[in-house]
Structure formats: C-alpha cells, structure tokens
Length: 166
Image (cartoon, rainbow, N blue to C red; front, side, top):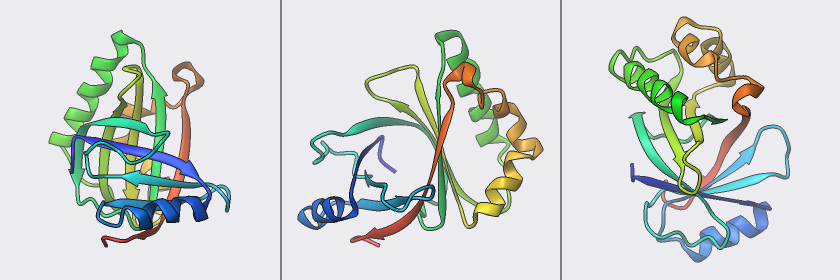
C-alpha cells in the first residue's frame, strides 16, 4: 500500500471514463451504499493523482489484506491537536494487539493531506453484518468516543464496483 490515497467523486459514467483513460493506474470504482447514484474513484498508486479535484490522504497505518471487495466503511472525524496523539496511540495498540474481528479484511488510518485535523478510519469487510457486530464489540470500544458530533463524525459506506487491475 502506498503512502497516499486520492479520491474523487462523480457519476459512474464520468468516473468509469477516467478509469479507462488511465488503465495503467490502480483506480478503484466504488458505489455508495446509501444511494445508487453516488460513486467514488480511489487512486491507490501513491503517485501524483490524475484527478482534477482530488481529496488526498496520507496513510498513517495499514493492516491486513488490501482487498477492496465487500463493504468498505469510511469513518471521518476531526480531532483537535491534543486528541490526535491519543487517537493514533489507540490505533497503534489495536494494530499491535490485533485480533482481527470476524470478517475484517483490512483497516487503515488516513489523514487528509490539506487538513491535519481530518482523520479517516477505513475498514473493509466481507459483509455489512460483520461490521455491525464489530461496532458493538470490545475491540471497537476505544474508538467509540469519536463517533459523536463533538468530533464532526460522519460515515460513508461503499461497495466495490470495478478495477481494471483486479
């Protein structure tokens, strides 16, 4: 996994065209689970992105097999400086004491390149139901405090549509 991930959003038609124009790159097309017409294209190359309006993230932590099939959750939080080290420490502990929850294929902690306070927890699961179980489990408890409006929490879930590389 590269040290950077870029994302852009749009219609399936436009994003598929971008994907085809750059078939040499590892671009993943994903569809939002909440709405049929919302799509995201991820650039996993770590190179200068080909997107005209990207959101770019630094990969702070990555664990597991980077298999994007299944359901992927993106949990977004904004953390004040004093909370950032605590948050990162919790994930370092989670990574080292890692007992993979059933169905979890991989997880990443990202930070938006243009906003040091914006963090994203990315988890990829075989099924939505396994993710729902994890949210109520002991292994999720250290992170549950961030799932509030105090940290500008919001979440998006996506399903893999296609990649020209896999």
